[in-house]
Image (cartoon, rainbow, N blue to C red; front, side):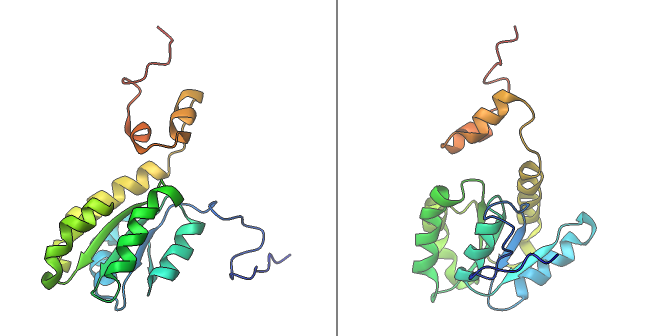
Length: 173
């Protein structure tokens, strides 16, 4: 029995936000995706490519805990800044790293202020980015195991998701 698709070409039987976290790369060419794939070959992490911010956000809606790698260009800078600022309201479990040409290095701190967690200007420097992405995906793949962790994970502020069990004892003392 087929599931069909809805008007957004999403599987009709799959509600938004139910997909597993993904590594999503949004760029016009495949330059960054290729660099990531080369380094991720042994890690068994798939790279899912999109070519514009709209496609990227559509995929994020289906996989809200994903790690996004988005290429900055002068053409998408304003839209990217707006989406980064709004990201915490719409997909609090997601994380974004920005990749760009060296000529756009001056944008780094503005993008970090808006919510980017990493900024890279050379495909040869993706190793730290891969480490961050793999840690994010590993954390996203592990659902909270006890009631206290489930409550903390469901709270609306980001800090709660990063606190350890030591910071919030369960009262089993």
